[in-house]
Length: 97
Image (cartoon, rainbow, N blue to C red; front, side, top):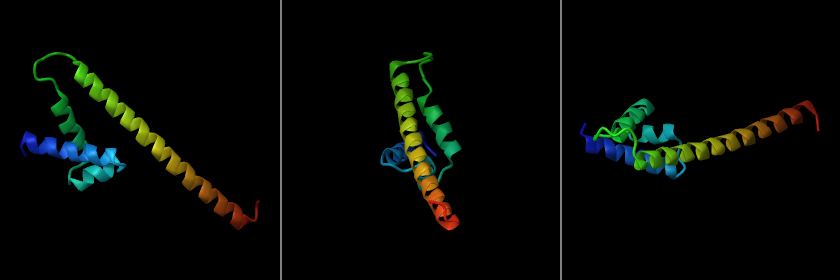
């Protein structure tokens, strides 16, 4: 697979995640594993000129961190809602109000 194909798949995954999909669903949609995604992303982000870090790489890392934090917040909210619903159902079954 060419680098341009890899870049296209990475862009598709990032667009899907930005649209609200989970990373697992996004990588599944383009038929690769999440490990392959991370490997490709790391290879693409690796500096070719030999410099240790660039402002662009730092900005990309910060954007990825913010994206992960937002996904984490969303998943915590979903888990909390599910647990509250299960708790209410159990209380109902046990007759506890």
